[in-house]
Length: 62
Image 1 (cartoon, rainbow, N blue to C red):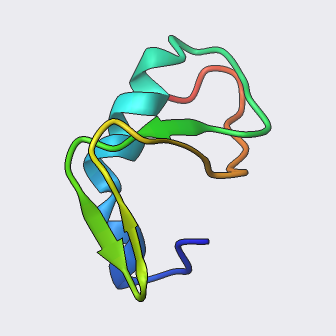
Image 2: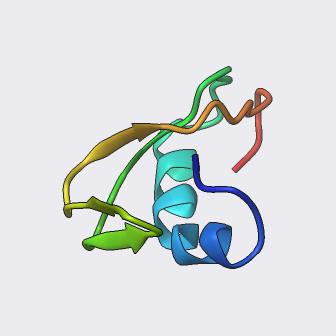
């Protein structure tokens, strides 16, 4: 959904927060909550939207 590169950088704060909130637990689908409205292409996602990223996080990663 977000692609790579610049789009990923735009959600870096959300990724960091979501990984921290795992408190060392693993997941196969990191969920992020947007901290601001984000427009990517023709899609606009409002602040507070929860997005399933599909990112895998291993145990102990923080």
